[in-house]
Image (cartoon, rainbow, N blue to C red; front, side, top):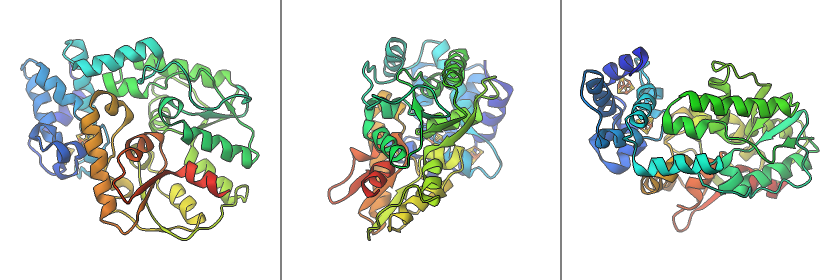
Amino acid sequence: MYSEKARKNADACRFCWMCRHLCPVQLVTGKETNTPRAKGLQVSMMERGMKMDAASARTMYECMLCGACTNDCATGFDPLIFIRVGRTEAMLEDLAPDEVKQVLDRIERTGNIYGAREVRVKLDGIPEMGDNLLWLGECARYAVPETADALISLLNKAQVPFAALKDEPASGSSLGDLMGFVEDVRAQAQRAGEAIRGSGAKRVIVLDSYDAALMRHEYKDWGVDLPEVVTATSFVAELVRQGKLVPRQEAGVVTYHDGSRLARDLDEHEPARELLRAMGYELHEMWQNRRLAKCCGSSVAGQFMPEIRQKVAENRWADVRRTDARLLVAACPQSTEALQSTAPEGYKYQDLFVLLNKRV
Ligand code: SF4
Ligand code: SF4
């Protein structure tokens, strides 16, 4: 059953073409079904009695939930609402693609999308209780641990006391992207909230912008109370402002990729740029930057549609090639996972915290 909100948004989008040029998935697949309007048309047809089939279910999954369409919509409609509900319908009808079911199976077995058993971040000696709780997220814990190790090192250098959870539970972000915001996702959020409150934290410093966006925007509606939630980028930028971290200057030209959820859901653009300038870099912007940034592909999409995620990341590199920067930096572990393995010859990728940690 589609909600009234999903119906209203799908009916508005189904005959509209205005944001199709911004969809990172449509741009690399060239498939009409991957425009936001085509997904709206399918949902509105299903709402009027058409049965969902395996092809229309797959269409609901060929989307990064990046919000570029929503951000550009002059009339204020939001395709993510009906795309998420479309995924819930696909699950209920048992029509979700096998690759999606395999990721869900890994989450059920191990609590993370990678099916990993061992945390790769160095957490020895870090307390599990304290005023500042560092929330790492599954991508940093299992796929790109160097991003979390660098952030931990920066906090140590700035002499900021902090805690981190060895058994950090899932935030609900990945499951919410796979199934829509169903009860299982809210249950994950409740468990994450209990773990955060159990740490005694007065502040949660969140490394992964997917987690930060969910905590800021959904947790309260789901009755999950949290202390103050700050992004790692804004927290570290404040440490530099206060002189607790003093980066060494280096001349060079860099371009910065705004991760979708950091730039659009959290509306945060400047702290990362401030950090790059503090390192002495000259910043040359890509054409699509800040709220308009083109998505480079989420980690969960990388698990169920790796070829499309790779093409989406390569297409972001095509934007880098249009600048005169040879170094690309991003601040979210999920961007690091997508971009560092797809750097073209002659170009280099660096995670913001890894780069900063080398300079202080
Ligand atoms: S989000 Fe707005 S611009 Fe995009 S298809 Fe829907 S109504 Fe059109
Ligand atoms: S959320 Fe992003 S990937 Fe999905 S339809 Fe909109 S622009 Fe395309």
